[in-house]
Length: 219
Image (cartoon, rainbow, N blue to C red; front, top):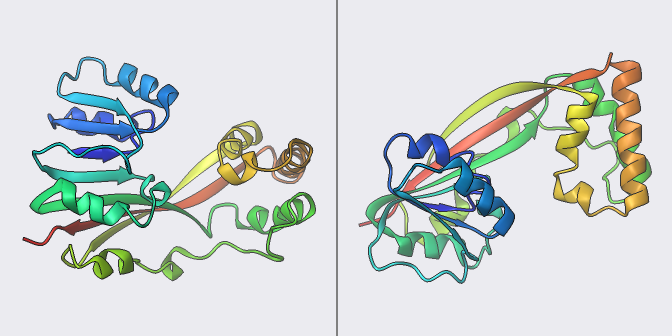
């Protein structure tokens, strides 16, 4: 298996435990170091620091190319074609995507938009999360390449509770929040924290949709 963007190895570890031989390509040296620690003892897993777009493919093809919440970061002009080139005929491209969807503490996610509209002027007015059923299964890019059979989708809705501190820790990892000016980011996080603590008893629940898309390379 070739994994694109393994991060800290969260998806890699359970697959390694099933005995897979894995090459994991990770752009960030700090995350690659964490992944190596998490995968210590799995001799058939090799974590490489590289830019996937520039990384030379090995001569032997892979059975699976996996990208767990990382495929959208890869250059669209490269990702599908290079994934196909890395696979044997009949091999599978598997991508995992996670969407924020309506559910959980729904009133909070409507009210928190006031914080975003105040501190981030790029926020669309009255933005609301979509229901999972309204998010389309997207295989246009794969179909357009002509390199793969029709994709199959598996979807899972799940919820996760957060205290205000836990939720702010998650938000601090999001690229859009990190890109804000420091003063705006601090104000936004204070606004969100105050809303959770004062109006929601210090905790909220968020619903996610996780989608696995699998397409096999044409023979």
